Length: 174
Image 1 (tube, rainbow, N blue to C red):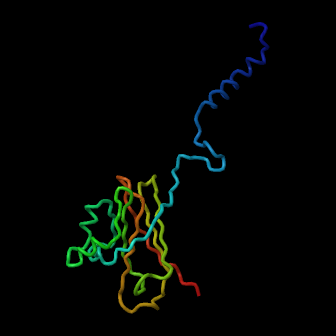
Image 2 (cartoon, rainbow, N blue to C red):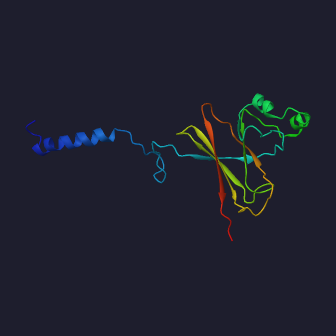
Image 3 (tube, rainbow, N blue to C red):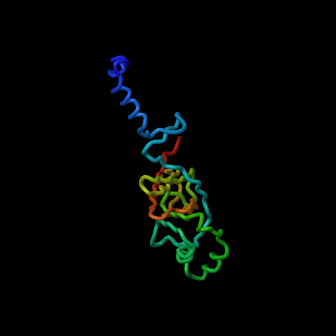
């Protein structure tokens, strides 16, 4: 030990700290431009509109989350139109997709002008968020009280997840 310079002994605590801290895993890995963090980022999901017609009545409920064939068949109207509805509506693969529906009053007699929608998957809150927006007609379009039902297919809703529906009327541009 007499041959080892004393300056090495003074550096030992610093070398120990550098070694110890370099062994601790960090949150940032992979691409330095997009570091992974502890916070999970919401993901925009493929969302496709589907035509249901009036095959699912929206009299008692205004928001629908249908994740299985049995629930879908129960939701289909149970009157003289049921057979036509079961035969003519698009077939849905409920092993891969879930059906979301929302009915809202837009002020339009039919499909709202400027209708757009997207679904976000937020794993940190275990939610899908279906955001729907349209151009506000400012009371200028439809005299009758009318409602519009939007039906979309999204990737299968995972077990334990819920759905939030957000409807927004955008201001008309003059």
